[in-house]
Each structure stands twice: as structure tokens, then as C-alpha cells.
Length: 172
Image (cartoon, rainbow, N blue to C red; front, side, top):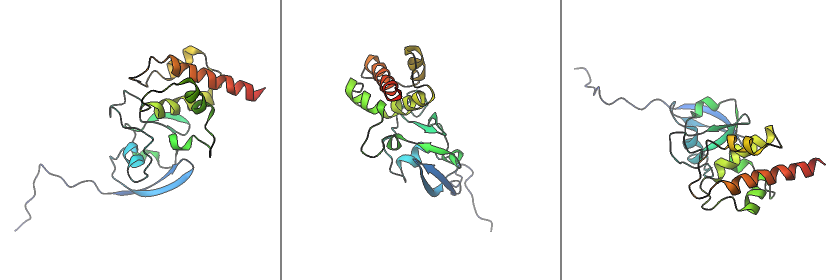
């Protein structure tokens, strides 16, 4: 007698081995083809600095950098990151030293609850690497996809300006 199958329930997709470069380190693990980068970062990798916000790509809390460009990890498949460089908030600080944007963020009081901070920092780091001296308009355009429910963005923009000024001082 043939096996009875339930057409409404399909088995979960097979796991596949993927090799990812996260914050300069290689990680290899099994993921499902539809598994999000956000879930791999927060789950098996334990990198909980990347936040789960809306799960729809509208808040920016889950922003990371992939090959130096900001990307939303809630909309990115982990498998699509194979062979690419992924940087999370945990990869920004160099040893005991904060980045200039992290330092400015602290000095300006740019965060209140801090939940959105990692996403802003990841987008901001990419902006400042691309353009060390952005205008206010360029800053606001860069962070347009990041939502903060606590502040009015004034201190956030101020932190970007301060980090840009710090970069100018270092260049001199």
C-alpha cells in the first residue's frame, strides 16, 4: 500500500551548508534556503546587536553592511551572503576604541532607548566611509530608511556632523 501524504503539509526544505564572512571571521553552518540573515546573525552566531524591528524593511533596525553597503538583514537571505563580507554593529568597534560615529553618538546623546542605534550606526558608517563630509541633506537622505520612535532626529544628525568634523580633524 502506498504511503499516505498530506498535500497541505510539505516537509521543511533541506538544510544547506553556507560559509559566511561576518565581521572578518569565517562562519560555516547549516541554513534553510529561505532563512534570513537576521535570524542567522541573532541565532547561531549570537550577534544580537542587530535588532529585529518590523520584519518588513521599513524601520532600519536590522541594518548591516554587505560588501560595505547598508542592507536590511530582515529582507536578505543568508544564502545570498555567501562569498560576501557582512559587517554588523559588533564589527564596528575596534578593540576598546569606539568608531568616531559611535563616540559622537554618545557625546551628542543621539539615542534614548537605543533600540534603533545599531541600524543608524551601520547606515552612518557606510555613509561616512563613502563621504567623510556629508551635508545635512546627505545625512538625512542616508538615514531616511531608519526610524527612531524616541527622538526628533536632531541629535542623530548632530552626531553625524560631529563624526564628520572629527574625521576632518584627523585628516589635517
